Length: 376
Ligand SMILES: *Cc1c(COP(=O)(O)O)cnc(C)c1O
Image 1: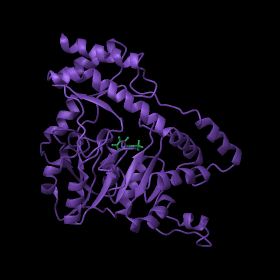
Image 2: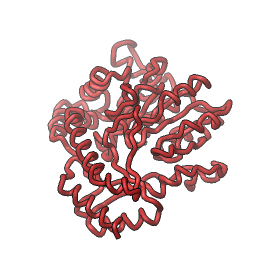
Image 3: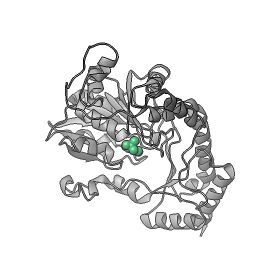
C-alpha cells in the first residue's frame, strides 16, 4: 500500500522532551511533564480535574471503580463501539445493556434509551463516534431523572464540542485516548477527566495502586499507605513528555486534519447527491474534529468490493467496530434483542486514510478511485 490507513504524526519535539526526561533521572509517573500536561488540560482547556493514565481503557476502568460498579449493576452503552467502552464495567461485574445507534450517525440513539433503564441501571456511557458529539442534553436529562452517572467515552473526541461545551466536560467522568491511531498521541496513553469533584480524591488513590501517595508527594500527609482498591494507572514521564510535544502541535495538527476531511467531503459530495453513498452528518449541536472520515456503503458486499478496489490501487481503508452485542463473548449474554443500526454500521461503514502527511494529490487520487468504482 503506498497510501496507508494511518501514519502517526510526530511534531519533532518528542525526542527533545524525552531526552530532557532521560537527563533528569526521574522516569516514573507524576513528574514535571505529567504536571505540564495536567496544567494544559486544566488551565487552557478548562477541565475541572484531569489525570493522565496509561490508556483510555485504564481511564474507563478507573471510572468503573470510582462509581462502585458491582455484580448485577447495569450499564447502558452503544453496541457500535470499541470493546474497552464496556469491558471496563464488565470487569467489575456489570451487565451491559446495549443500545442501538442513530439513523443519521453511529452515536447512541437517545430515542430508545429510556426504555432500557431499569432499577439496576447505574451508568450511561455515550461514545462520541468520530469525535462528533452525542446528544448530551437528552442523555444528561435522562441521567438526572433516573439518578444515573454518565461517563463519556471521549477516546476520539479531543478538541470537539457539544453546543460550546468541550466534549469530556459534560458527563460526571470522561475518558480520552492518546493511542497512536487518535488525533494526538503518545504511543499508548489516556486521560481521565473528573467533572464531579466528589470523585477527585478517590481517583488519585485508585490511580496510585490504592495508596495516598499523591497526597504524600504534595506534603499533605507525612506517610502514605493502602487506602482503597486501585491499580497502576499512571503513565511514565517518558509517555507524558511524548504527549506534551503533541499538545504543542495540537492546533497545527487539527488544522491539517480538518483540511483533509473537507477535501474528502468536497470530492465525494456529488456521489452523495446522486444517492450512491452516505457521508458523515454533523448535527447542529456538534463540531467536527476530523478524527475519522467515513462513508456508508449500501451493503457489506459493496463495501468489501470497494475496499478491494482501493487496495488494488495501493490505498488502505478500514471498516470499524463489529457490533458488540453479537461478539463471541457477549452474544449469549445479550439476549437476542435486535440492534439493526449498529449492525448496519458494522457492515457498511468504511473509513478512508486520514493522517497529517496525507497530501491533496493523494486525496484526489483516492476520491478518483472511489468515483470510478461507483460509475462501473
Ligand atoms: C481507541 C478507543 C478506546 C481505547 O483507547 P486506548 O487508549 O487504546 O485504551 C476506547 N474507546 C473508543 C471509542 C476508542 O476509539
